Length: 81
Image (cartoon, rainbow, N blue to C red; front, side, top):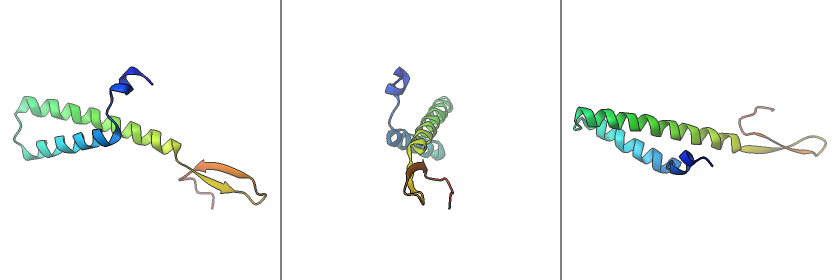
């Protein structure tokens, strides 16, 4: 695991912080400089969330049993029907 990944929040923490930032920005009670910093952090958190979701999607698989009885793992969204 890279050092930068160790410092990253987990998905749930990043999402919760992102939601808080959005609420703060929507309320419009933040000074301009603070709003810019909050926006930059929101972009960073969004990227973390997207990266973690993409990694999770790669891990999700389903089991398919072929007519000959062989078992294979395929991506969950694979449409073999």
